[in-house]
Image (cartoon, rainbow, N blue to C red; front, side, top):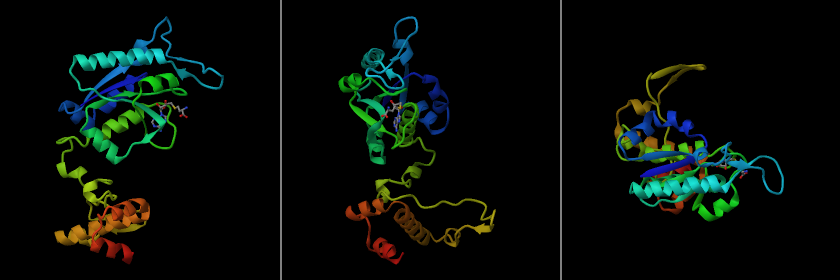
Amino acid sequence: MRFDIITLFPELFEPFFSHGITRRAFESGQVQVKLWNLREFAEGNYRRVDDRPFGGGPGMVMQPDPLWRALQAVVASRHQEQAPKAPVVLFSPQGQKITHSSVQARATGPGAVFICGRYEGIDQRFIDACVDEEVSLGDFVLSGGEIAAMALIDAVARLQPGVLSDEGSHQQDSFNPALDGLLDCPHYTRPETWQGPAGPMPVPDVLMGGNHAHIAQWRRQQQLKQTALRRPDLIEAARRAGALNKDDLAYLRSI
Ligand code: SAH
């Protein structure tokens, strides 16, 4: 899949692409990314991309023309390089919130053309005419769409086959339908007893016992407990989907 990113700050992406999971996904060719510097599509001596809002008010608004020229260049390049047709996605606090299921859908899709806003946002006419989807990182306001683009590409990259060093590891992550959409269980590693600030803290006994059935049961119960306390909505959704068995329901009643 190929992601084209239209941004005023392409250099923000460099360290992100050259480390860890995302680097592996790019090196393996599973995820391709092309950065487009919006400034290069601006005209005039000052290469302006923004202007004051009509009707007054604070801040600046990104003008439609540079964005339109950039988008046409992206579409031409995708066509020329035989990349599949892909939606134009604008990052915006007003968009649909990114969820595990939307990431999963994108992880097997054609990629996208991402538009990163800055300033007060983008001239509405460009959005009306050219944007297929608006997506949000959450109910808060960022100063630009770049971090949202990195977050989404990171989440998509780690779902690509072979990208995580341990194939099973995203299977047990929070929100995975394979785990009925519940939160992950807690994890422990060496040392067996950690000398914490309030005294020695051992790892739960069951994890040290080597009884895999007990461990699996304990983990499932921890998952249920963690989710019931933090995200009762996910328990409710799993219950409605018929994803909780008799033992799960009995355990939930017991706590
Ligand atoms: N005036 C706008 C916010 C502009 S913030 C409003 O209140 O709706 C500048 C840019 O940052 C936006 O154009 C968008 O691309 C990005 N951005 C801000 N918050 C975001 C969020 N929660 N998710 C994704 N992108 C966001």
